[in-house]
Length: 640
Image 1 (cartoon, rainbow, N blue to C red):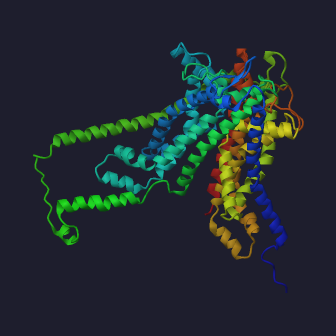
Image 2 (cartoon, rainbow, N blue to C red):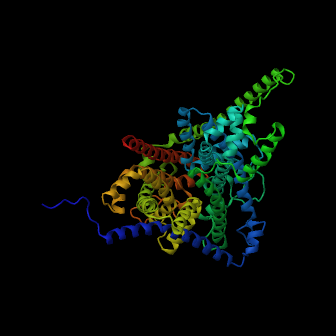
C-alpha cells in the first residue's frame, strides 16, 4: 500500500521560473520611470537645439510667446500662472478640508461619518473633464455676474472648481492623521479643564500637524498637475500676472494645447511641451516626495509624537523640578511632600465666581461656533456635489435618446451620436485591463509575499510611489514619444491602452497589496507547515482569499482610467464616425468627446457634451457600485 502524497510536487526549476517572473514584473517600474525621464529629457534636448531657444531665456525669461515671427520662450508666465491657480486652490481647499476632517474625526457620530466620508470621496471619483465643463458653463456665468470685469476664461472659475477636486485628498489624509492621535492626549486635556473644542485646536491638531501638512502638500501636487479644468476654464494666454479675473495658461494647459492640433509638430512650439513637462515633473516630484514620507509615517502609526523628546525631558528635569523645589521645598524626600498638608485658599477674595462662570460660557460658545463652522465645510462639499450632478442631469437628460447612444453619427448637428465613443471607451478599458492587471498584481505579490527587505526592493517601492504622483498629462507625452513615434503604433487603441496601463499600474499595485495583507498570516504558516512551497502557498491559499480585494481595487483603477482625458489627448482621434475594428485602429473615447464638444462654438454641442457626461457618470457609478458590492459580499463571507 502506497502512502498518498499530501501536496503536489513542484520542481525547483518551476518555482524559480515563477519567482523570476514576479521579480521581472516588479522591475517594470524601473522601465516606466526610465521611459518618463527619457521622453522628457530627449524632447527637451530637441527643444533647446532650436536657434530660437536658449536655456537662460527659458529659465529666466519673462515672456511666453511661442508663435509669431519673433517667438519668446520664457517660462515665468507659465510658472506664475500655475502658482496662481495652485495657491488659490489651496487657500480655499486647505481650510475647508482641514475643518471637514476635524468634524469627521472629533464630532461626527458614527452613522453620519459612514455617510459623509463616502460623499466627500465621491468628489474624487468624478472625472476632471466633468469638473472642467462645470467650471466653464456653470461656475463661469456666476463669476461674471458677480465680477463684471472678469473675462470669459479666467483663473477664478478654475480655482473654485479645483478646490473641490482637491478637497477629498486633504480630508482623507487629515482625517487619518487626526484619528491617529492617541485618545489619552484628549482625555488628559479634558481632565485639565479644557473644552472639547479647545482640546481639538490646542492638542489634537498640533499633534497631527505633520499629517495635515502632508495632505496639503499632496493637494498642491494635485493642483499643479491638473490639466482638463485649466485647459477648458482658465484660458490659453500666458498672462504672467496675479489677477484671478483674467485669462491665464498654466503649464498643463500649454501641454494640452499642443495635443489638440493647434500647434504643428516638429516646431519649437511643439517640442516646448517636453521642456515644460520636465519642469512640471520636477515640481510635482519634489512635492510628492516630501508628502509621501509623512503619509508613510501615518500608515506606520508613528506620525504622532507619543514619547517626550530630549529637549522636553531636559525641560521637565531642570526647569519644572527647580520650580517645584523652590516653592515647596526639597523633593529628595518624597514622604515630606506627601505628608505635608497643602492649604488652598478658597475665599472669594481671590476667586470671582461670576467672572469664572462667564468665562466658561464664553468658551463653550466659541466651541459651538467652531463645531458649526467645521460642519458647514462638510455641508458645502455636499451642496457642491449635488449642484454639479443636478446641473449635468438637467442639461444632459434632454439630448439622450436611443439614436444618440447607438446610431452611426452623421454630418448634421441633429445626427450627433456617441456610439463610436462608447465603443472606443469599452475597447480601451478591455485592453488596459489586459495589460495593467497582471503586471500590477504580480508586482504586489512579489512585494508582499516574496521579496526581502533589500535596497533594491525599497528602491522599487519608491519608484512606484513616485509614479503614482506623476501628472496624467506627462503620461500622455510618454505615450506620444514611446508608443506612437518610437514603436510606430500610431494613434491607435493599442498605444492608448498601453499609456493608460502605465498610469493605473501603481494604483493596482497598492490596492492588491492591501488585499494581500488582509489575508491572515496563519494561512501562510499553516501551508508552509505541511510542506507547501512559497509559490504554492501564494497560489492556493493567499491569492484565492485576496481575489475580492484585488478585483475591487482593479475596478476602481479602471474607473479612473475610463474618465481620464489628458493621457489620451495626444493619441485619440479628434472625431471618429465609426467604432474601431482592431487594436491598431484610431479611436475616440467618451472623455475626448466631452472635451472637443465643450470647445465647440455651437451651443448645441454643449448640450451633447452634457449628455455624454451623464452617460460617463452612469458608467462610473455602476463600476463603483460593483466594486462596493464585491467588497461587501467578500467581507460578509469571511470567516476570519
